[in-house]
Length: 144
Image (cartoon, rainbow, N blue to C red; front, top):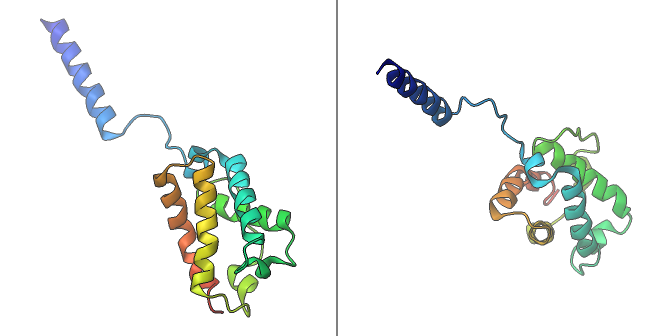
């Protein structure tokens, strides 16, 4: 009887601990969850190939080396989604002032990035969590 009571007590404590989130397993960052640098590099590689050939927005990138842009986007996104990176490039304001980018043009770029995320197999939830982190960039790039 005492042994059964002890087992029940330990089981109750264990379940309470598990259900309340007191396990010792650290929560994975979104960066780790999606596959880290390799996945971001693939996403932006695919997106940039499409962006540079787009008839509406491609001209904005004609003097920007693809590798440089990809590296900067990977670093910036890595930092925003909990990765070990530290973005040290130009601010979005510095990079986009004077370009007079329209909202429609911004969304064309976003669609290419979203398409690339789907192409590499991210879930809609992962995609939306990344886009939520990137969304404020719009206000630092459009119509400046």
